[in-house]
Length: 156
Image (cartoon, rainbow, N blue to C red; front, side, top):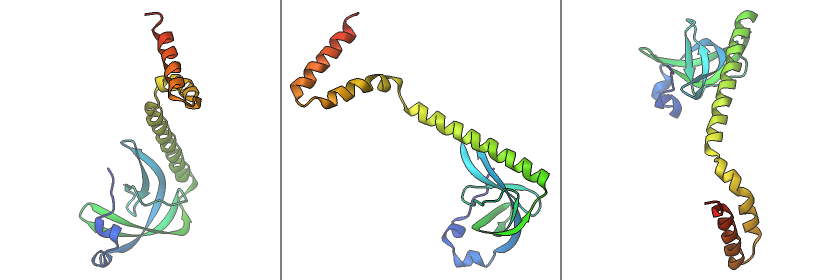
């Protein structure tokens, strides 16, 4: 689903430069695929392509990009240059709506991952840990821990 840069494109390999062609593409905003963020571009033929490391600023804006083609694989070099042109307002609104939807989904996925790391039991024990941290001596902590254990096991 994604077209990523080739290692030669990432390294700036001189042999890869020879096959670079400048094309005008349209930046379509962010997209989500398999929980990851991608930048969507429409190439000169109207095909939407996804890249992990080729961002731009203006959704619906036209950019001059350097590309190399190897069969179906298209590598884009992250030196997009804004041409000052944009798509029509209707298309731009659609692209912006898809960008907002992807952003909301990516944020929800991030919240889910963060909440999964956070354990409810850790939250419940936190006040006891804060009290124990203030106790200066080991025997004070031992006494406090014994008290907590007695209280927890009292109903067993």
